[in-house]
Image (cartoon, rainbow, N blue to C red; front, side):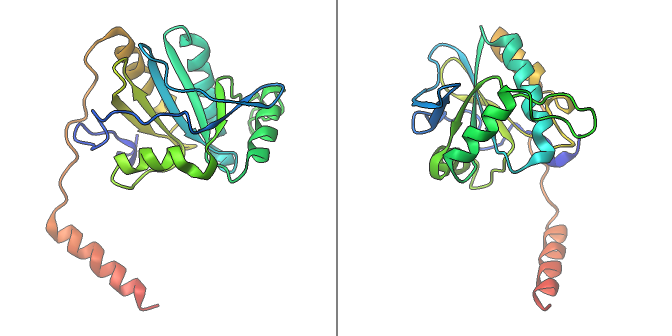
Length: 207
C-alpha cells in the first residue's frame, strides 16, 4: 500500500467525537422515501463517504457491502454519497440493488447493501473534513467506537480498496476491544524537501 493511503497515530481526527449523520437524507429502498438515521449508540459505526461519479472505485462499494453483510450485527455502516443531487443517488442505488452496476473486467455486481444517504450540500462531509484539517477525499471511511469517538480512518481508491489495507482487521479489533495496529506518527518532512516542492510550484506558476 502506498504511503499516501496510510493512517498515522497523530492524525488529528483520531480521538475526536464523530459528527452526527442526522443531516444526511437517507434513502429508504425500494420506496425511495426519506428517512433520518444517526450513529447507533453503543455500537461500532462506520461512516463511509462515496459517490457515483468515481466509477473506478466501485470495487470499494462491493467490499464495504461484504463487510456490512458479515458484521451488521456488531457494526453499523452508513454510506454517504457526495454526489450533487438526490436523483443521482436514487438512480445509482436502484441500479446497485438490482445488480446492474458491474465490474468492467469481471462482470460481477458491485453492490451497496448498507443504508445509503445523500449528503445534501456535503454538510456531513464538511464536518468530517474539518476534523481532518480541511483535507478529505472521497472514497473515505471513519471507524467510530461505542463511545462515539473516531478511532481509525482510511482513504480508499480503485487501486487501494479495503482488501489492500488493514481496514477490516482494524474494524474487527475495535469490535473486540483490542489494541489497533499502528503505523506510528506521520513522518516529518525534511525542510529542504519542502523548499524544493515550493520552488517547483513557483516554477509551474510561471506557465
